[in-house]
Length: 448
Image (cartoon, rainbow, N blue to C red; front, side, top):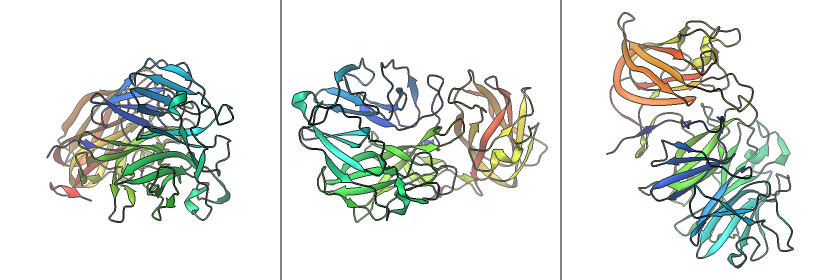
């Protein structure tokens, strides 16, 4: 069986001096996956794991992109009433078709659009765009006779905010019963059933999650799936899980790509993660996540190892006040270890307290920025291991990366101490949000 291991959050190359990736939508075309995220950022992949950035010049700001293919053309839209755009290829050139209007001819400002095409019909799922998060999710069938710029029939409400669904309530602890933010619809058809997914209670909260309604028709009526939310914070590394897209890989497996909340540079700082979609015997949709451990992409039930370094003993070359060494292994992306100054090299050593067969590492570098813009450059580092504190074996030698997230696996090596040395940074002091070592007590494979 083929093996490619992935570990969330995904390592995505920086784009336009940005590090935050949110609100993904994807499409498959000519053996490539094209992923659009907020800010008109576009990425291309053959396997959904390794991504390349494509610089797309787009004349308007695209937030929460929606993309689909219909009758020989690609269609793209987003928040803010940017209208509908049309192209013959996902990379453009994109041409403006016009404003989307309602039945009275008034321009609409729908938010979080999602396009769903079936049997010559073009559906748009969206929220009202009125800035009222309790309105819920709506569906509008757009008319191909008018280049999809006006409704074919009246907009229908699929469902609204229900305060009895406690997880939909606004706030970190869902403490606001009169406030909610129902958004980010995504429609999936499976075994002649229509699954309308959505996110709540607000993307700025760790409690952000994904729920599901289903129906026998793309226009409803919709029934609430009782095991909602199907994707939510599990008190691990990843939280604020939502605003997702669903895509099939080349072998037909169904995947969910969603953003997760980092909340470092600003309130909306986010990254991306991927996990498989499953269906229970009763037809319920389940997203098998969020996960933050290495999994085999071709067999997600097989995991490479468990985190061995969380809250273990740490030594460093230096540190700044308030950015203590332990923060590099506390399983929290919002705390950092930071070197005392910009001198290099700097190092960190973890004592796992026992010997393990370690086989992979994840590094999330810290940049100490107050805005979404990133500094120019890359990191260069090496990793060595030891089982006796006398002799060290180098398992990674002077690796260079321009992404702030790095993951790799390697042949298992029995070790207790793990030593990371940083030789170069992008003009900032060395620092880590998180350094995670994965492995096993023995050399056997683990399964969920």
